[in-house]
Length: 124
Length: 273
Image 1 (tube, rainbow over the protein chains, first blue to last red):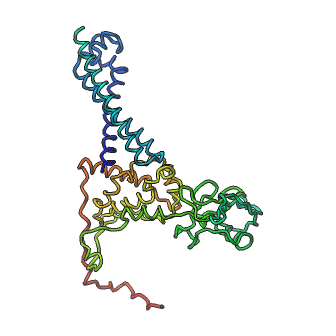
Image 2 (cartoon, one colour):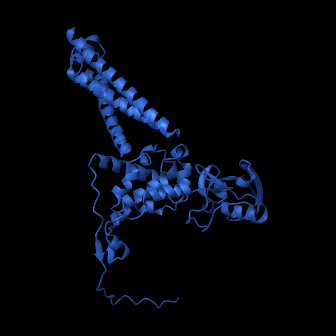
Image 3 (tube, chains in turn cyan, orange):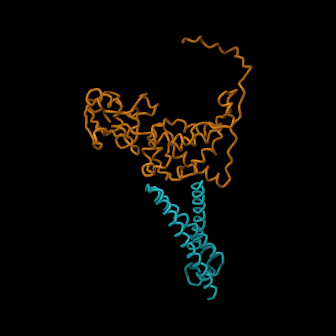
């Protein structure tokens, strides 16, 4: 049952990544035409546009969701690669623990960074 | 390719009693019209190497006994013409990804143990009806098409020998067992999805398939185990999301009681045996 659950979340995380990477490509390459996410300047990585996006709560949330999805998707895939090397039960448990703790640590740090960047942007 | 005058068989030999590692042995024999790899091995055993061992039975690609690694591909020895290999050097080894019992005889017990663990048979609640049938389970032609191609599997092990995941992960059930599990999950007469899920939803299930597709390439019967595994993954994901509902097993259709032969259809001839 556990592997069925993990695989389903792996697929769902892939869909989230697809959605947000689509959004990223739209902002970076198409928004010159539609102008929704780059209100200040036609160039998407101009400072004024980066600042404008950082002030939007939507982007803070999307960064955190994308971070969580990418971490889970990538670490689950890495775990599968390690497991297919034919490692023993004890090492599998250790790999699970290291990836879980490492993933949680990276997620907390990344989420804090996204929140802090938004908070800083709103003071400028 | 035109038929060669002679064919050299490079055979992987192994005798567990000798304590020596497996080694290649070259034997050259004259080519005979229509010679299959199995015919060549028989000729070699009869004339040159009486101790050479392999498994075979039906000689017509039905029993699945003679799966071997022939010129770098898992194939049935009885179903492989020497001329179709395009060379006069035929290398023959036991199927990879299995332990070797002797010479060309792989140990297929893990394959059949995994197969049995996935309950490859019809599972229903009406046990009484299964053992003492009062009629037939209804199945429409489009229901049959859902699993028909997977039922052509002859359990030769060629798919498992070609699978890169089986090569590295001993817990993975492998393409044959998983395809056969899907064959029954997709059968409209079956109600055993929940029972099989107890194995399929674990790390023995289809999750480690990378969709290399080698199993489908290797299958001598044209079965597509890779497709079965992807369909099974989809079924299990939908099941987790509670979007999959196991259909009720098909109902019993009573035996016809009043059948009359049409007047324009002649009677069958009398039995001869």
